[in-house]
Length: 170
Image (cartoon, rainbow, N blue to C red; front, side, top):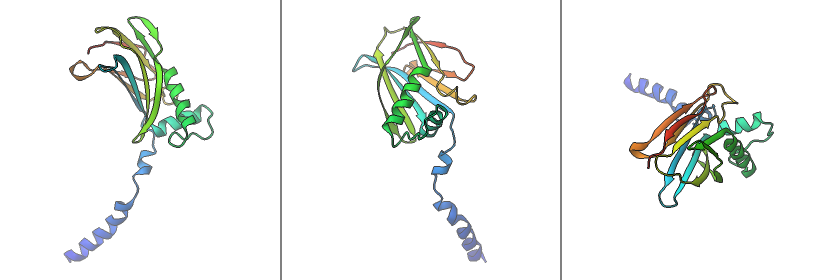
């Protein structure tokens, strides 16, 4: 009797064990994470934006790109990187700055976009407005981490958020 129950359970569970995980990842995650920290080796303030690939492709299609392929097309990656740099606004001590675009890459299921500027002085006031994908989804949430270690500050943004500030600790 127990053997029969175990056999039935194994037959029921077997299809679940071989189902691919990819379809679960195809849904929009509606979250982007940006990190701003000073690289002590280069003396630069580095910005890293992490956006799920599927969300990035969906945003490109909403902008009229017919074949949005973040993984297979460098042109799609660069188009989305340009979008991110327009939707992420940065001020240091009250002055608007435009970080230099460094590049992008795929890491796991995310598109990573890199920017940098010369590092401001310790204690600088960093003001950010992260509106990445908020024009695509009202429920989009963007997290911006400023600093590192015990000096880390996390700011949260949504479609109706305005600029927020934090002091840059090193």
